[in-house]
Amino acid sequence: MQLPPLSRIPFGRHPADAPQRFDAWLEEPAGQAVIRAERRLLADWAPRLVGQRALEVGPGRNRNLLQDARLPGRWSLAFGGHAQAHLCGSLEALPIARNSLDALLLHHCLEFHDAPHQVLREAASCVAPGGMLAVIGFQPLSAMGLARWFTAGRPRPAWVGRYFRPCRLNDWLQVLGFEVEGQAAGFHTLPLSDRGRARLCWLDWLGRHLWWRHAGVYLLVARKRAAMVRPLMATDRRFRRQRPTVITVPLARWRRPHNVK
Image (cartoon, rainbow, N blue to C red; front, side, top):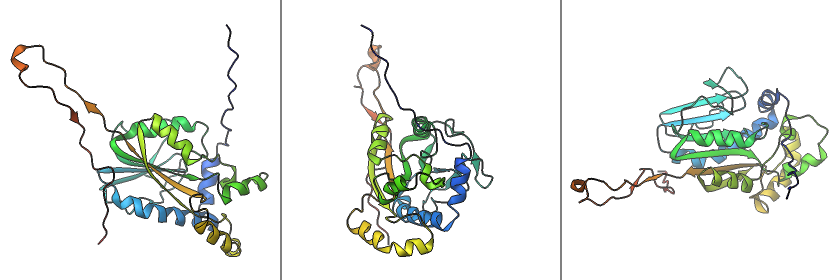
């Protein structure tokens, strides 16, 4: 029996300068408001990180989003070719050794890339067992996501990207060997100028009280599962006295309480 071909809808192609345009948009008043909301989300998660090495991956310049992390090594990588980042490279082939990072932050790396699955797979391979992978993205089921239906003709960087729901990223991360630990959301208004956001202050109030989980920006945090090694039974009789035991990879507790004094 001959099966019919599977019809697949490919991801939309983005212009080559989409990362540079989005990075320039983040310097505008509307983009700065989004950055401030994202910093508030990271302020509660970053101080809980443990380890030695952390990497922030973004479309442009180094915004130092992991400044609250108490890790000695913190670097930034720009896939848009910006000179102010520590490293430059491709999202499909990160210049990072495998299983070498304790924390990796993807800052709007999936919205403007043609192969988001490959981006997430490459980032997952760079995280060490027990390490953390955080994804910051735009929520399609939000006031900002719904407003895109009325701004389809505007070539603004924040409106033309492809938004992914957190539950969809959760499924992708489960396949890659990660366990999602939590999600936070912020920015309940629209990315407009200061005057435009002042007029929509009622929308921000309604969003924080009624649909606080469906804000415009979300932070999804996942931890890579630690591998387990079981030694094989010794073939020599002299080494059969000791029974094999299960050796687990040492890592920090998954839900470590954080007390700020």
